[in-house]
Image 1 (cartoon, rainbow, N blue to C red):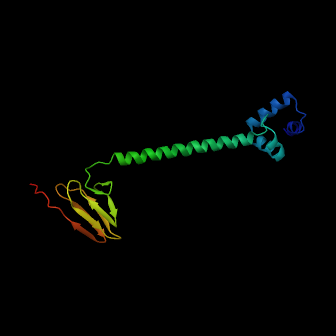
Image 2: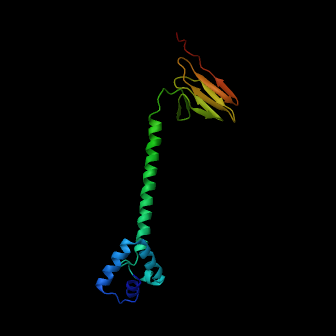
Image 3: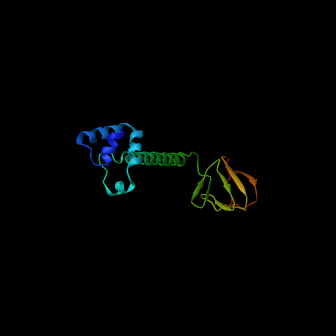
Length: 160
């Protein structure tokens, strides 16, 4: 191996020597690293990659490409999981916080203003307040775990 590397570095390698060195460098990362360590930095920058001169560099690039692909796959999986969570929420919309629909089990922290679809009822949560929405039919049910809540309640329909 050392003889082949020396021949290559001094420009004395024959075509057969270059083929043998290429095969050795492609099959052994240790040989590729040893070869790359012996090449002067200025010759790597000035000469194009040929005959296995940059095998460790190519291997590093392949590792980076694989890492990018893995990260892209992980990001895509996260987006699909998040979309699945938001699109598969079941149950009716109980209230709205701006443009955000609130469902049973949601926890809203103040300060916040809550409105209800189809009526003018408004809840206002104070600073540091926490309100959990609970499913109830008929009516509305909430659990205020901390803080203050003020309400302006619209006349409610009587359900029997």
